Length: 374
Image 1 (tube, rainbow, N blue to C red):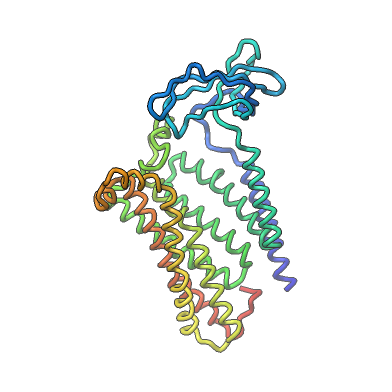
Image 2 (cartoon, helix red, strand yellow; image 1 turned 30 degrees about the vertical axis):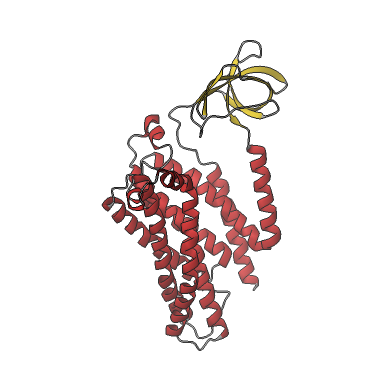
């Protein structure tokens, strides 16, 4: 037991050190950007006299009087008739403004970018951390470290490497392998259960990656349905293979659910092997398959609901227009989401037999499985 605890502490310390190292990794080089600083500003007055409504949207310029660090500035908020990007401030709101070097309260007009949300975002994240640690104890603390590590890997490794033109799908697959190893071994420890869950997860994700490449090309899914693709191209990244980025995004999105299912099956097989050491490997595999069948039905539906929630307004639009089902299923936007959902579901279905076979073989290697060692 002491040996297992020592291993867990070493793993946690290793993840902490890796997270610190990743934090100091330089981010992707900027093609364009502002030389100024973004700061929160309290809106003292809002002048809407230059705004004009055309149908459902507003056009024009909103003049603001804001307080930045105890100094009063004038700020401009330009509305372009884009509901997803435009915002209208009122007195008492906190806005994010861009303060350029040399800006003075009397002469300079600042640019209001958006509402300031960081305070409530940090509050929500802090509440999540506290609840996770209280409910999960040491396991919750390990899960929190794996959460932070995952964010850093995506932001400091995946995004910069993808922007440099590396093959996004295979690079993201490599990142998923790293994240899966860290998350599973932090939670399960360096045990045979962890090895079985890790091997099963990666097998399912790899199968999904191959299918995504095949059907992405057969169905001519170019990835342009993802948000801000055109903006990314015009920012100097027109060399990117957006289809490959989309395939990688599919794998990344489904990897969490695949990992959960693999851990469920490996844990179930481990419990059977612990309570009945005389069970042969064949019976352990059958038990793992039965566990997988029970879980896979709800997990695939969960994945469908998670993905469909992201494009519910798109489905509402097709429904409102009376578009036939077969017609809107053939559209590029819906087809992109359909491929994402089905590839993720395929990965889930395939990970069940993979994990069951691997778990049965691993736990049948010894007649008296030791939970604490690999």
